[in-house]
Image 1 (tube, one colour):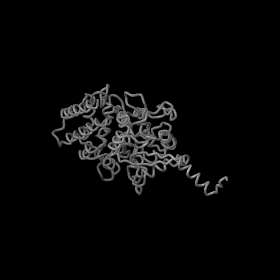
Image 2 (cartoon, one colour):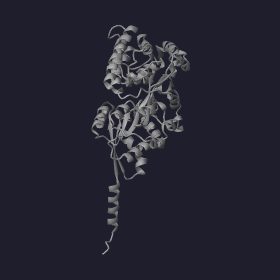
Image 3 (cartoon, helix red, strand yellow):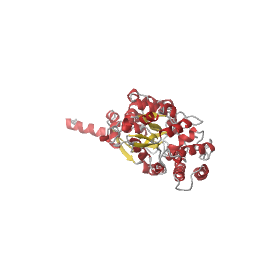
Length: 438
């Protein structure tokens, strides 16, 4: 006798079939927006709507603890299917044989190297390995933010002021101590030893002097080269000459940025999130009502003898080799790094898209300050993509941070010789770390 299928039975069979076919993906990402879980769900909503049999579990990591969790997952093979990696981390994690290489066909699906900013594409693989292990997701770059009203009152043309090191120093001397709304403003503000961005903040000055953080063969530290010494001496001279308060040397980036918003500093060097803060109402945690929001501009780093480059980094997305769902993980990775999701995530996070078609999209370029920012950072530069960058950066971070105590007069007397000795000690310790990493 043939069984009769009731509507309820049919519905149950369909449900069972769809459940059996469902795929579950786990993704680890960093806390970049103010409501990361909700924003990630919103970002994936269109994709999940067209893939009803896919379930994505999002785990949000703090940047402070992410490195230890990711390296533990890489070592054990018990990690997620898809994960976010800081651009300086890809080389190290791929060296642990923990990432799935992306095929040429997969790379072509998303446009390959030509679809992304060159600086961030260079982070998707080790300098000595042609295999691509990740795709760029969002970018962080640095530029100068300045108070246009302060420059105007001092009679300083911003375009001329940021031309080169000489013109910048002269401009800061003219601007320092200008009185705005009855309050003196310092020419410049940059963070000191308590900031995790110390290396990022200093790198553009070193590059623009013709120096680098590593030798050309990537085997030794170059932090104490004559060019690097020239850059560090110039950079620290602003505090030594009173063009920025020595109290800034005890502050971190968020405190310096707050100082720019409330009128303590006329110039700071920071990232694209500043644009988002200046266009967000105070009720939502922004600075839109501040004087700075109505009186600011964006310029490039002043050029040194070897040009004007900036620091360009961010985050990449990669598939873990241990994933049991690599095909589905790839599809989600390709979606997240496609044009529209990158534009949406840029609006959510204040970071830059890594895709050129997204970064130059009219909806973003309609903001004149965003357009200014993109114009200044398009030729950004990243650190060398070596497996041992993590511990090397820690050495630089500690030693350069301590150097600010010399600048502040806390550890001996500030002088070019004292700076040279500090950089020599930094290079020696860095070389020990590089030797261990080989």
